[in-house]
Length: 240
Image (cartoon, rainbow, N blue to C red; front, side, top):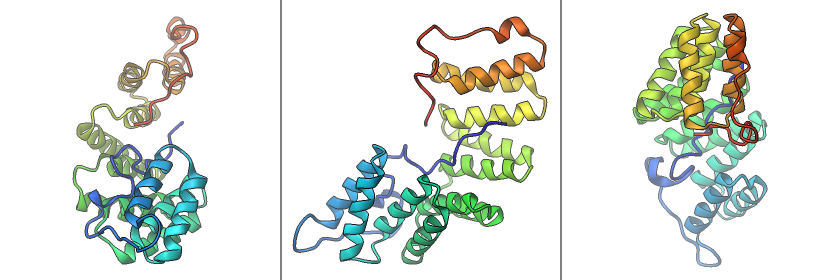
């Protein structure tokens, strides 16, 4: 079953900022850019996908202040994006020793642990994120993904449903919910989930192909051939 990667929180207004990081506070230095300004630049570069430049700024901050929470967290998230989960676990774990009240950091830590296949610890990290922020849709989404990894589909569905209740336009959650329902042979519900993804992003190739797979399973071959307008398919993919 196709599923999408853990959601590290990049759709939030601040990926690593103090808005959801508990007791974190801005820090300034006498010379050069303030650490607060560098932290804003790191978040912007990360969201733009410029991981190399974001990493360079993280290292610049950490050279000045080795236990700077936001930069350790950001650097860990960068390593996680690259699939370097051991480094990500170490860096975000260090950040959490500085500030353990950040739901974003617990979410990122859970994703690093999931990448290391330490699933029980990942579940605990996502639960810590949710305890700190009960409206954290991405943490419910990621918790559901681990439940799916562990072969616990009903609990995975509950997590995706909660993520969608918090964010009805959460395309990734609708897509992965469809995958779980498809595996459970709940085909009409799976189709409804894929249709929701397509309504959100009409060019989402993953949703069209997955929907076509359900139609093939049901023997609805004519509907399997349905495609979006030429030139649209694959141009967009829901990334909420």
